[in-house]
Length: 359
Image 1 (cartoon, rainbow, N blue to C red):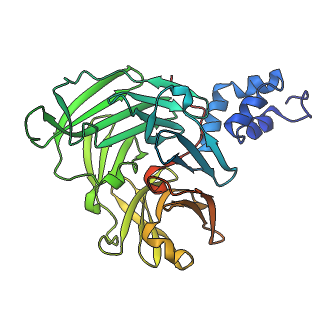
Image 2 (image 1 turned 180 degrees about the vertical axis):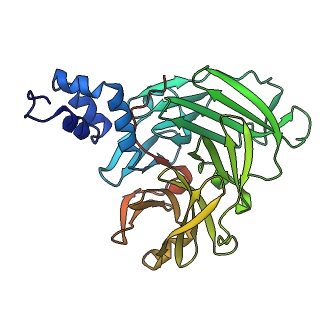
Image 3 (image 1 turned 90 degrees about the vertical axis):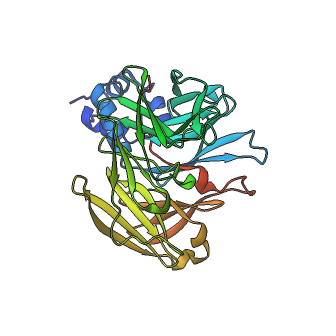
């Protein structure tokens, strides 16, 4: 027990500090030597990341009409709306994936250049270029169809995945599916080749979910979930809940909920939420059904982005909404003043703060 700061035990101080936003935490570290010492301990890093993992939020890229200027809007159910900047990268970038407080960004003017950064601590890492020959490239537009980021907080390690159909210059694509995996421990890329018979929908590029040491994407037509085990480089097809309907008036979305895979289906009148309770046996359970009568006019353009056990964040063309599960109340959290070049749901990512160092 420590009697130097208000007669509070060290453990109580640690618990309070672990619930502060990152910027407030950095200011608190300068208050006194004790707070600096407590917040610099390895145990505190682990505790802070565990607490932050329970508070999912939405990160939205908002561009002006010329798309030359872009800012990041962070929408938090607890702390409201704040603005972040990636100006420390000294590059024009696009956010391609988000996981446990880290972002994977690709350079807009220089294709093939990728960064991993923590926008809260403003640390970043420029990834080395892969050794792929210039005469081969991803098909059809030269960029990877799938971009994934897996950040394991327990072992302080991350992986970046670039995957897609390759073609040799001057030749037609032959169905070869190339996967490049970057390992933060070795600072190197590894490559393996496979064949995929299904296309990934453009709208699902941002919807990558990292759970159980694997990255997951929803395939075009919502036929199944495509999973990549980052430990053994194995692709796996995971079935969707039997009750999920895909067709006119129905849409399915892949999210994460408390460390498990979750599927949200939106129809004209209902939003239904399933969670995978058993990952190995692929057992799904329906956990919630939400009436959409209050937002009926928005249903055709509303997309779930992230969720917790307490709320669901959804994005429309110009707004970010939150649905409170206990009170069953809808609330607008953010709205752009002018019409954006792209819908907000196209550039929205699930996000949570952390003090994970990408270096």
